[in-house]
Image (tube, rainbow, N blue to C red; front, side, top):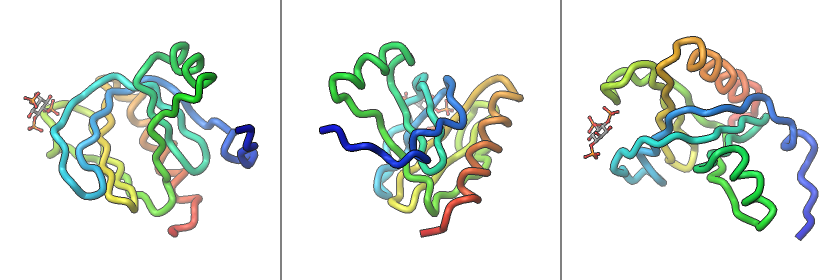
Length: 126
Ligand code: I3P
């Protein structure tokens, strides 16, 4: 129904397309499968949309939910050894979900790394 989320959750800090691979769910390893994702960072979460932004916005009206990642207590680190690709970092959540994010373009991945790191550092750890 029409639950109004707190204002802070509505504040989008950054959005854009990156390559994404989820490599663990609740601590259980998954087969790596890279795909393009539209990614929306707000103060305490990241949302991953499988579709284009346009498609995602129209799907939301029908109650379709993106994958949402709680950043409280999450970790972010560069993960050179986890991929043959360049510019890969990993986000690990308290719940044991692990995501790799990647872009071939250096400044794009650096901007994302710092934006997400800043968001995590501003949040309480639990
Ligand atoms: C994986 C696929 C991934 C690759 C991964 C492979 O094979 O090629 O792109 O990761 O390497 O296992 P498959 O599609 O058969 O599952 P990178 O592109 O990040 O290197 P990995 O097993 O060394 O992680």
